[in-house]
Amino acid sequence: MYPKNTWYVACTPDEIDGLPLGRRVCNESIVFFRGENDRVAAVEDFCPHRGAPLSLGFVRDGQLVCGYHGLEMGCDGKCSSMPGQRVHGFPAIRTYPVVERHGFIWVWPGEADKADTADIPHLHWAESDDWAYGGGLYHIQCDYRLMIDNLMDLTHETYVHASSIGQKEIDEAAPETKVNGQEVTTSRHMYDIPAPPFWQNALRGNDLDPDVPVDRWQICRFTPPSHVMIEVGVAHAGKGGYDAAPEDKAASIVVDFITPETDTSIWYFWGMARNFKPQDEALTESIREGQGKIFSEDLEVLERQQLNLLQHPQRKLLKLNIDAGGVQARKIIDRLIDQERAAENSTETARAV
Image (cartoon, rainbow, N blue to C red; front, side, top):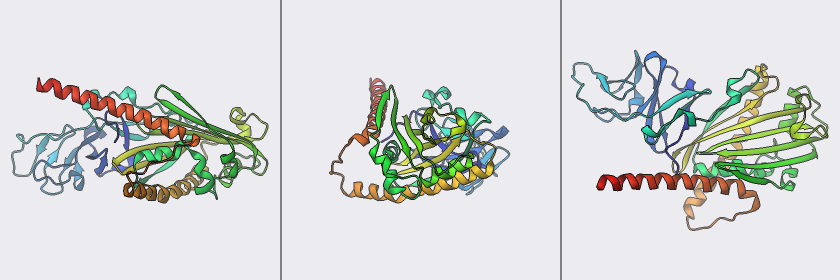
């Protein structure tokens, strides 16, 4: 259902502030915590003593303490101590490669020896004081690929988000989809149109007139395993559109990290990075609140869509030109899954010989 030899966003640093966090990623039950020297650790959420979830415990002196009988576990998955017991012969539990970077905690749920931190995507906006970021997390009961479809085809904005970012001009502007290696890009440009309410507020936030016609753009970029970055914005009409000078536009990057929990549920890390008035915290919070409401409108659609698909697994879905981005993204995902399966089969064959 999903590639596992890859990096996924598991959580944000605040989620493990003082307490362990149990989270399922790609059907792997993992507990995240801060060990010695504030190091982030990820181990199997399973106490080797009696099988209790370690995430029900607490952290003391860099050790993860089981909340059932007090067994202490280190970042290496080995038992370090237990009150009144000898535990050095206890089997170690599985550990997972984990990295804290760009304001997120990334985990590799597959084969640990294949993990390479160089494969974690570079997020330039996360490392620059010229950018501000605000975001959140939604837990959604749907196949992660349905969310990728949703983000790679923004035609739905006209209908699902009619009161915020939707407008009929989106339907009227044909999208263009390109594939470059493992990246899929779907672009849509609209010219001399009214700004919808969300973008009127963004223009005001950048001290621009919100009531004049604008040029609008949406450039959706998918990269494996399930990341979608969307360049969005509006500029006063006739000022160059996407290439307009900063003083004539309000532009941002919509950040979407989609992490499979199970075959039919996801952790959806959403946010928006902008490079205008980055020090304005009130503006950051206003945009975050507005974006959060927009994304919440997708939840019922996606979850009801998932239920329909589960009830009618034999039904074939139609593919239109607006679906090209999602279709191409799924092809890349399928290739990665096939490659992993082929490698696993080859390894199993070699072991059998």
